[in-house]
Length: 196
Image (tube, rainbow, N blue to C red):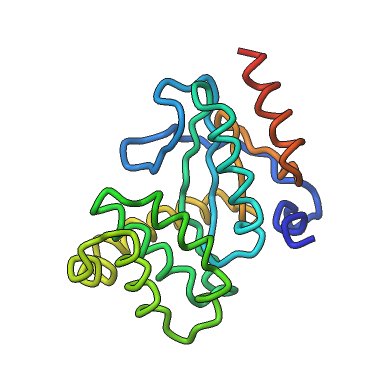
């Protein structure tokens, strides 16, 4: 239900818009290096609907390794999720040590453990250590202006596009309704690949 509500615009309809900009060198991309289709996800590490979508998106990347690229962009819904900004900064701090996707995965896998913490900093440091990061460097980067700026730039882009919530998906630059199930998502991706 949360995922369905997140996919609806303020008028109750699905958001229909274009991504506008393509994938850039600063984006976090996994999957095919020369993709037939690209899935861009605007997401929030503390969002329950994003956590529900996470295993589906990961499975899509595994099921379409040569044809699908998945792009993750930050959209921490700060007014709803007090720890979302710092979680996104944790992923960016990990990215500086070439471990964005590892931190991405552990943040979603442990969401229930840190989402209600008053201050999740120590928990995020423990996660950084668990994936083999230089912890002292991670601590420095976690609260740096540069890392915050990366998250804020992505957030500002999402708000300027008036995205209806998280997760918001774009398939080859066009917004799509959240399919709601892995089977429906897979059919949508396969259909887009078949069009090419």
